[in-house]
Image 1 (cartoon, rainbow, N blue to C red):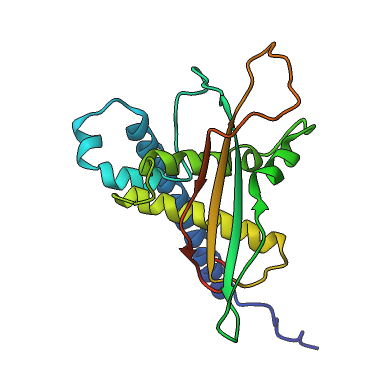
Image 2: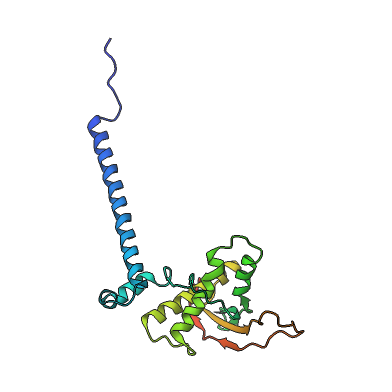
Length: 218
């Protein structure tokens, strides 16, 4: 009695599928290698001394590096903060009756401090994300809140999005139309200074303007 025909996938079809899978894998590997090479070159040009190549492609280098891949030499020459900064945020939304409702202040820095305190391996996000976003904002804006360069605009949006996302996540994802930051800076007492009963007076109490966000806080 003749055996039934084999219903498995024909060899030529299996071969074509394997070739397509192999080609896709090779393409993905090639893209990863190219992206890695571009990243290494961009970071190298960012940290290298000024040269004709880095000067010519400075906008492209800054667009790739900032704000997520910023590099500096503070590992070898640390510059510890001599101030404590309390970064607070509040939001505002327009109610259906046309009135504007403003939320209480929410301490963003206190959340990071609680995540770092008594933590043997604190995350990089809790230690540096908000702190570096604020210091980069000050570096590009100075004492004013006017963005005068593309990088300043980018860092302003970066800081705004951090505050909006954290506020939304902490308060159940409620919608709002505007977000505002307030930064209170107080000095850190020198080692050996006797502790007084009164906290140190703030050296700066900076209130930023209201920033427009989407109804979902982004």
